[in-house]
Length: 459
Ligand code: F6P
Image (cartoon, rainbow, N blue to C red):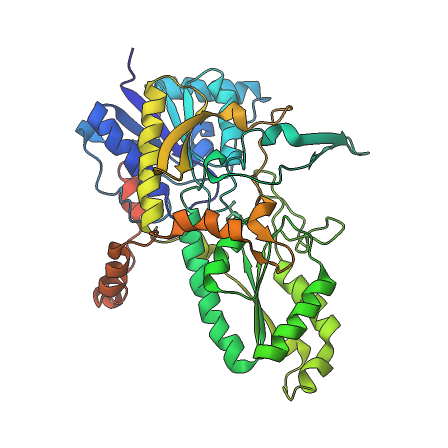
């Protein structure tokens, strides 16, 4: 029997493409005459006794507040997940879904979200539509999960390591080639790099630009479009001697240097550069901060003031080396065409998967040389290791040139299909027509939350 009403939620950090994914799902549901209920604030909405929710397509017409060109998510997101060990809480969630008349659930999220979805999927039909700016949801090649090994530490906690890695991969075997949100994050970071470069050039400085991505270096790698001199990714331990040597050479040649780093870079003992805060967000992730500052201090100590003064720069090492975090600007705002298009396609496909009863599956993007991108699906279990853990996809080493500390030739081949046409003419028109809209000077920002709030219903 076909479903007549489904639920949708967005979980984890926001991305620019979430509304586009929701919109794609709702458009498909409209065609199939299925009602879509948006759950407010991800899994925390299901934990709330009143389960705030809204109908996204009354009479199979998408509500006007849902705009695929707008970043973020009109139904809100949170990093709270359901703990299956808390039986009462867990039972309450499935009961609430039934009381809302929801027959299946689409979760839009990343690896944390699949883990949150897994316990529900044992009792309730659920599928995942992917999102994450980190581009870490998926596999470099299908057998990758079986290469994980685990050992138990003295404190009883498990440590997971990769035992070997296949040397070569082909583009068409990558499981979930790219994730909505990634292209826009890179688009923002690349512009930041190009803009910081001109200051580095004019003031003869060394810039260290930190981008997000946690343990995966995909955003850093994409930053190659901004032509930084070096890219450091979390997957390859930072070789400070080599880095110093390269900085000296480049600075002597061009009197400035731009280094892009992923926030999760590590030293040769595996310690995080930026593990200063060592605090955790609600999903249990370490909050990464301070990698750029840490690297700056290392470089300033190694180069010393003399390095700059002997070259007739008046600045000290501390002044000549500066850091910038691209920060949350790479997570927010209007999505570019690649993200909008594939987010909508993946969202629409998630509806089809749910209606076809492909429980616990993920709507994914495949790439093949002959046909380009196509939307497909995989069972979430294919991403799990032998112990059921889904690991963040890291940058396969064939995409990175360790010697040059930069993108490799295969890395270029990987990025090109994503970015060749990632920006559409409508993105350029947006800049032309809307950035300096005179009306913005006279009218206050109208938060979408105000209008959405009027539609929220409670159990
Ligand atoms: O996972 C997405 C991400 O943007 C990471 O790249 C980053 O480390 C983290 O979220 C930041 O989270 P928050 O917005 O909670 O600070």
